[in-house]
Length: 131
Image (cartoon, rainbow, N blue to C red; front, side, top):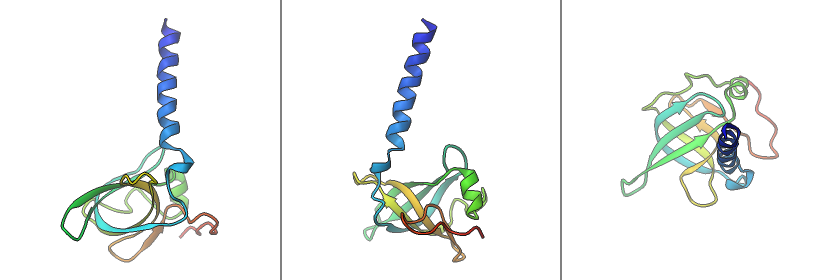
């Protein structure tokens, strides 16, 4: 019985992971530029997350979540767990979800001081050099 319960947990968990990390969920051919305020910056496995609130021209706020590579990869690209803080005004470039939801893979982010951090280069582009 215990093995059956463990198998069920593993199957349910793995289907969620596969659905979340499906390569075809995001439009990797173009980026969407968003200007907004960092709400949360999560540094951890399996990947980092940047949550940004973006206001449209009418003042409506959309909550976006952008994912990056795992922390060790991001360290090689010049990121640290202190790269940004809640409240920072940023410009993000996201490979957005194909279904229109406000999630995506982060291409790059421009910080308040103008520093640009690359998260996931455009497909086919050379990998960014560590800074």
